[in-house]
Image (cartoon, rainbow over the protein chains, first blue to last red):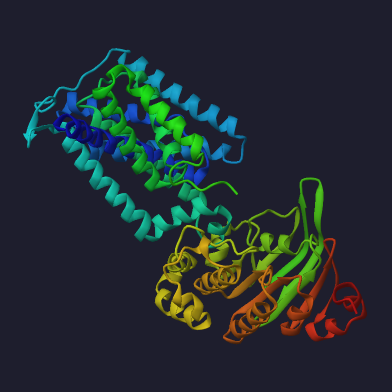
Length: 288
Length: 234
């Protein structure tokens, strides 16, 4: 029983960060109907930003989210304004090519600057944990989860309660009608891509004390984010939150009870199984 | 107040509007009637700047709209209630109404406007927290008009508000449009329900395959032989 609880809790702690990655992707998709295949690479940029300010300025990774977030927000807003905006009405495959291309440019530029060496960011607490009722809880993962929870909470508040947040949701639900409300949908797109990138960047910062940092790390996370978003229902923020937690727990349980090398396999089997019965995802709307 | 001159518009190679001239004066209800596909909605989409005309001019109180982005058109006080309602399906009634007053200058009147909408449509007041997408067609139309009113419109553009409603609701909606006009909002209405809309209009235009073929006071057009034959089946 302890082993079970232990793995569920570790799964939830990791799943919270997965959720953050998924929420970013789903907001971008919701507002622009563009699947951002550079999402993992934005997360990678977040990791490198964190690593840089840690190794050069000695700023703690958890503190550095206040730098990583805004930096990635601006970068994402720039990408949207300069590139993505031009393909909003293009064919889906062209949009995919563009975001994949942007991702490749990002990862290869980082490789050029910092080589493809694996970096580790060792903090005093990187491997420390404490015990609670026989369950060991990793400190960096717990702090990461708490920050994630706070950010997710703030994001929900923003989307549900503020005029700008509601305008982002309105734009996602009906772009033309949003324009007729006096909403500048172009500005909302820039904002949405900025927020999505910032969330990916912050997730990168939060996992950097516990993951290897290297230029190609993004591809794993792009795939994972995609699975989370499709599982939860494309465009649904609550769906992505759930999806992230489910994937985190599934990975953790299958690593313990099956084999840690097979955890991804279990995730994909679960994913395909769910899509078989509910193609629109957990909270997705069936297409009319 | 709103003036359209020699408006030409095409979707690709297909020309939809031909030299359309149209004027709406302060305080009027002006209706554009015509069959499906005559180009009525396209006129409104041009005024709201959702699409760009091939040529011609649209001015609002002397300001040329051709370089104004659509969100600025709303800020100027031209508010469109689009065809098929287009309410935000996953937002509540209250949230939909709040979006109607997204424009900064209208936010201070939000509470007052909401009260006004609820007094015009008591049904909406009973359903404040219902999701827009789960409401009936009639309720969605009330919400769409209410949402439009939240933006303090000086001119309200209404695109087929009677579409898909029961005869009783249709009459109801036209009464409310008349009431909104009486309270001081100028109205440009686009309709296929020729009889009901001409009855409440000060002036009207008949659009056929993208051209204005007739115009005049609403009551006069109701008596016009061509209108009777083409639209009223008498």
